Amino acid sequence: MNMILLFEDDFVGEGRVRLSGRRLRHILDIHRAKIGDELSVGLLNGGRGTGTVHFICEEGLDMDVSLFRPPPPPLPLTLILSLPRPKMLRRVLFSSSSLGVKKIFLINSYRVDKSYWQTPFLSGGHVRQQLMLGLEQAKDTVLPDVHLRPRFKPFVEDDLPGLVGSATALVAHPSAAEPCPRDIGGPVVLAVGPEGGFIPYEIEKMLSSGFRQVHLGERILRVEIAVPYIISRLF
Image 1 (spheres, rainbow, N blue to C red):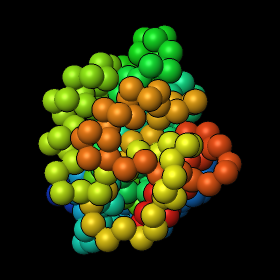
Image 2 (cartoon, rainbow, N blue to C red):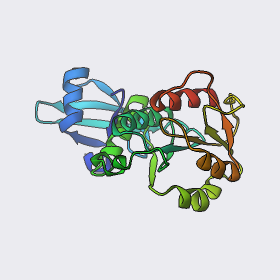
Image 3 (cartoon, one colour):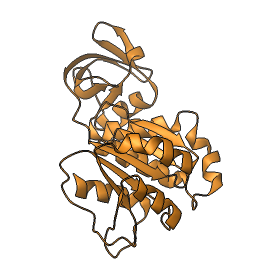
C-alpha cells in the first residue's frame, strides 16, 4: 500500500479523517507510523496529498489531511477482456488498475467456461476491492469502470461500434500476421481473448467492427502476463 486511499465517510471534520480496519493495520504493521508522521494519501476519485498522524492506537487513527495534487493521467485505453478464471481475473484487475486503465469490459466468448460467470468474485464488492488495491499500489485515486457483458454477439453488435469510434482497435491473436505496435499516440481499444484465443467467428465479428489482429511474438502468454505486456508496448 504505497498510498492510503480515503473515502468521503472517513472524514470526521474539516481536513481530518478517522481510519480503522485494514488500512489501520497496514499503517501500524507496515508503516509503523507514530504521531506526527506523514503518509501519502488520496481521496477516492479526488486529489492526492499527505496525511499527518494526529492520534493512533490499536483501535483507530486520526489524520489531518491535505489534498493538493491531482491523480496521475489515465491511459487512453479501453480494455476488452474475455472473462478469465477468478484467480487470474484478480491479478489482471490489479495490474490494469495500477497501470491506469479506466474502462474495462469483461465479455463472454466461446472458450470462456460458463462457471466463471457464476463466481462470487463478480458480486459483493470483490471487483471493486481489487481495483482499489491497484490504485493504492500506483498512488492513483480514480476508480476504473468495469462492465460485465455475458453475451458476445449483442456486445459486438451494439456496444463495440460506439467504443471504437476513431480509436485504434486491436485484438491480440496468436495467428495474426501483424506484430503488436509500439507507442500508440492516441486512444486504443484492446481486446484480449481467453486461454486458446478467440474462435474464428469471434475474430471475424471484431474485424468487421474495425479491429486489427496483432500478435505478441512466438511465445504464448497467459492473460495475466499478456495484458501488462501489451499495455507496456502500446504506451
